[in-house]
Length: 520
Image 1: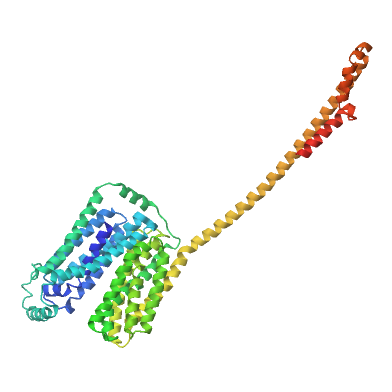
Image 2 (image 1 turned 180 degrees about the vertical axis):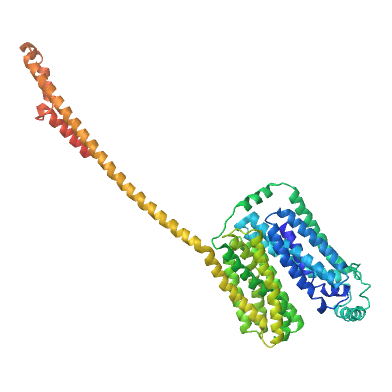
């Protein structure tokens, strides 16, 4: 359901580009005077990220996602009916709030359900967004394909709208049926799709399933890093540079290729397409890579790829072959950084709504600020590859920030490991000393037992000696006849006795004890 929601999110965000000039015609404005709709949507997205981060900590996740998607549906249906530029900008700002809530909420819900084991799911979520952004221009082309060419329509309609703008200002209505119904169909199809997904989220909210109980149980497990706030601030900067570089290169690579590298427009369009194509393809493959690679490993590989490719872009900015190869590598390297970064931070500290909103705002600010600054610099220094310098500078910044993030996150863990090893060594020493004491006690007990046995043997020898002497006296006092009668038997007994062998009973017992000891 989350992937289906982000597929619609990608389509709703990307549909503005190919339909921008049609919306300008619908409100009787030219493109340059209507560029504020991007600014309005960006500010709405920032506000939605903050609002979503706060509400997701206090509301049901499925309910909030369903409401935000329903609001997105309403915005998509109303945009083609806007007949004034101000109303269109306001509608785009409201639309940005709903998609900001959806974007933040999707990431938070992935972390709430799967926690630090959700790296493949996070990659699938952001791949769905890229897939939706890829499908939106195709859908717009199918819906608007029967219209006249953009160049002829723009020139005729914009001149007419500029001529009639002042005269029709008083009679303008806020809403009205669009002149071209194909524009309405393009937004209506996407709106219908998002509405269906919203109904499923409402169904999940109404159904008290076991999945919701698992979500609550996982959300209750709380893990907070020692440097939680510092990690969030550094991640804010990390996403600021990363998303800013991604949007800047994707937005300005076409103009750079035509003005600086001398490419034809068709070749420059292909260069732009290969950047976003490798970007989306690598996000799809990252779903499988995330099952066997840690998020930190994927970030390191992405940083190495983006740093290497951006360096080659700067060094060989005039070579078409290098531009094609390095651009494809750069797009693939930038694909997995954002979802891997969100999954990585969850391994060390629990990310709730407010924390997610914080670094999502950083990404949104980078998307707004860096392309705007680069556009100004590119106008002032047209002979310099400012876009490529920005890519290299952002790659260096992210390559420096991530090791700092990693060290800050693992520093308390290293201390805990050292303390644990120290305590284990102390326990081992104590156990070994206790074993020595136990062996000494056993030796003392054995010695005492042998002494007791010696005393018992001695007492037994004395008793046997007294009994033998008494027996001998009784024999001498008996009548001679009896002695004669029993002489033969006594002789036999005497011959078989130990006394006949020249040993006393005491010596015999001592020898027996000695043999028994040697046997032991």
